Image (tube, rainbow, N blue to C red):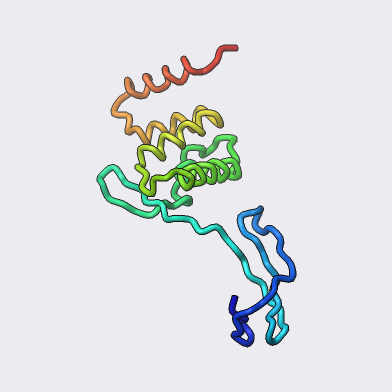
Length: 154
C-alpha cells in the first residue's frame, strides 16, 4: 500500500476491524518510512452483473431500480423501507453467488415476487400486475386464485 504522505510502498497494519456492517474491513496503517498513519478499506471485489431486458438489451444491475420497483408496489402498505432493502440485498447476494454473470429481468422479477408474497400479499399482487402485464381481469383473477390456493387455511 502506497503511503499518501511520502509515497513509500511499505507499511504495517496497526489495527483491523470490520466496517459497514461487515461489508468492508477498515485498516489503520503506519508508513515504514515516515511513520505517519493512514486508513485503508478492503472490500470484496464483485463481478458486474448484467441484466438482460425483455427486448434483448443489456444494462448493469442496479439495486436502486429494484428497490424503487418494490417501493411502488408497497405504496400505502405497512412494509418498511428497511425490509425492502433487505430483500434487495438478499437478491443481489443470490445473484452474485450464482455463476451466471447475465440475468434476465424475468428471473429477477420472479425472485422479487417470491419474497414479496411472504411480506405483503397486496404488494405482491401489485408487483405481479405490472411485472406480468395482466391483459385483463381474468388473468388478474387467475393470479389471485393461485395466491389464495397457496395460502394455508386458518
